[in-house]
Length: 334
Image (cartoon, rainbow, N blue to C red):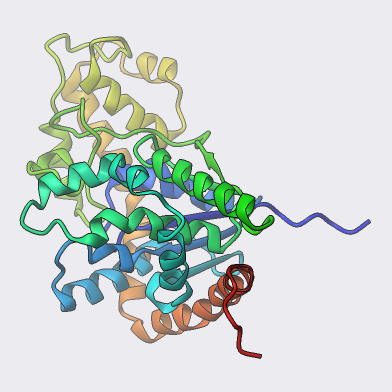
């Protein structure tokens, strides 16, 4: 009996040049695990990046570094397609089509447009408003069955589903209607300085954020300064957001349960726990940082990787776009 095709997973990453510990523990480690059970298509979303003004040289440098980090963190090109979005022009082509099948009201309700409009009030451009159509194109081009998302991105998958169902209803089944994939592994890593907020590279207080590029001294310093409470007992409980966050991080990198962590640090205070978390994170990041440094010293290899992966992605995207163009009524080149 012929084997069934593996379900396809699509995920895209910002071209930030580095990632946070939250990105790594909360998402990317899980995406690495998915490679064994799913057909994975991953990409760097450099087209999305220009909704905010970018320095061209910095964007190029950050895109290359982000590609290297993803490989260093375990994305395997033997199992996965990893490409740069702008290398596949079908993304822009399908985004225009989907602009015409997405309602103005749907876009105006997107929370990220409202948030970014406030953050960049001097540059509220049309791309900032319509980029969910590009995001829908990213997903639908590859007939993705699943899209791994956190709560803040679920709205975009819901829009992609609505647009796919609308197009399929008007013509005939064309797009796979994607499902959001809520990760079974990973944690929602919060800021070390404000544990009510997600850890973010854009945090004004960088003491709250561990970057994958941070050296051991910086990691230790940030964890020692992490906000906790006056209780001083290493215990996972309501109202102890700071210590809960540190315990989540320690659990992720050591594999220990909350009960095991509580037993390990019974009778010990935060003065011993915080450095232990820092050391565990330093050990976790050390091989990733070493592999990243090695890759960045071999830019010819990185260029070869994305040059070989772009045609693989484009083949999948082209097949979908051809179906769409034909159904709409465009004359296709033979």
